[in-house]
Amino acid sequence: MFEYQEYAKELLAKFQRINVYTSHAPSKGAYHEEIIKNFLAGFLGRRFSIKSGFVYNPDLKKTTRQTDIIVVDENIPAAYFFKEKDFAIVNPKAVICGIEVKSSLHEKEFIDSSQKAFDFKSVCPSYFHVFAYKADFKKNETLSNWYKNIKEIPDDINCYPVSTFILNKGIIQLVPEPYAKPWGHYLLQKQENDFNLEEKDFASQIRD
Image 1 (tube, helix red, strand yellow):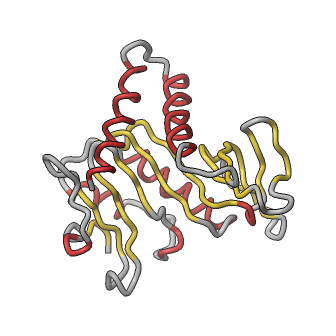
Image 2: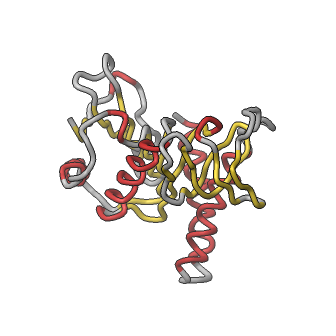
């Protein structure tokens, strides 16, 4: 997919730009989130807004962990319990998806993002995605072992991120039945000049 590759290059260039000037992790992290927010805003209509904060489920009386990006449907009545500029506590009925942003995806961050997806979806039955600018694994077996080291999440398709976008690697896509039996995570991997994203090439199952 040529467009995905071009977008990945564009986002990685912005990611690398600030790294030249500062090593201050909180500032870099905030900017990396801002890059993704601005990128998504270019594709969303006026009906949707982008916030950071929490989702509160009044029926369950539970709140998610802080979420980097929450895409909100502004047409839903009483979409917010609280809102102050770009920070919000959102009604789950108004949530389109939650997004976790990682600068680098190592095993610890990978397990943490999976746990956040589980926590988020236990409060808000919506989509959850992960954006990571880079990852350091060289073999699919490494990624498979990361999944095996996740201990506290039920083996249920609804507990995991739908997609994990790794800009220097490819996409980890959650593929449901009947497209994959059993359901599993597949690495749609970046090739030398393109991304191999055709369904017939879902060859790299990394979790089953």
